[in-house]
Length: 225
Image (tube, rainbow, N blue to C red; front, side, top):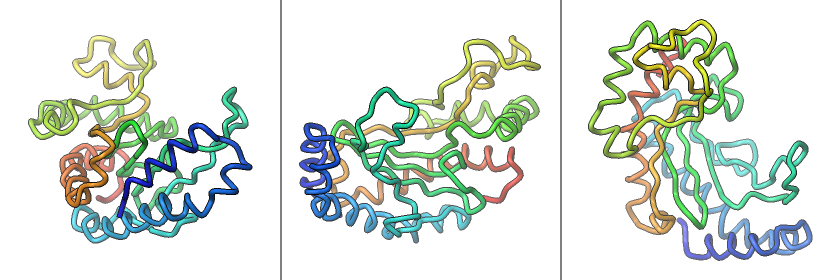
């Protein structure tokens, strides 16, 4: 699916991140990035269904699992119009946007990142996760101490608050996790892994390794997995 020209395209885009260049090289983007990413999503669909039937692999190039290449520059000082990576999210069927619990793949010239979790959920959903950690600390501890989690991811990630959120005990055993605004398990590999024949299989194994966290988040949000 993926070929070295994937990296060639992004290396060139990094030097020419403007609309004129991109419009001229849009066929290169379609051939080197969009088509192989859609093929990857198709290849993941049956594997993902075995992990959970409630997460969607949609290979449509527009409106599907693949993220657009266009950056939202409205509130950013960085006005470069295009992202320097390709990514897709296999989000829960009940989700509507990138803030939904889901599995994720991110590929750039610097690294390949894949795993699962939830990124900056709305406050009410974040509160549900925090409350569940307080109510079910043992299950959370099991996820964090899992050999599989440590092997593939090193631990749970996600930026957090500097201080404990209001209403939570600063001395709680999981206070550093209760501070988090995102919760995810991400495996990081050299970018060349996408060129390996076994890449799809590696992503599947990694998604399976992240499933305990996904189950915990879905339980907190009272949705099926």
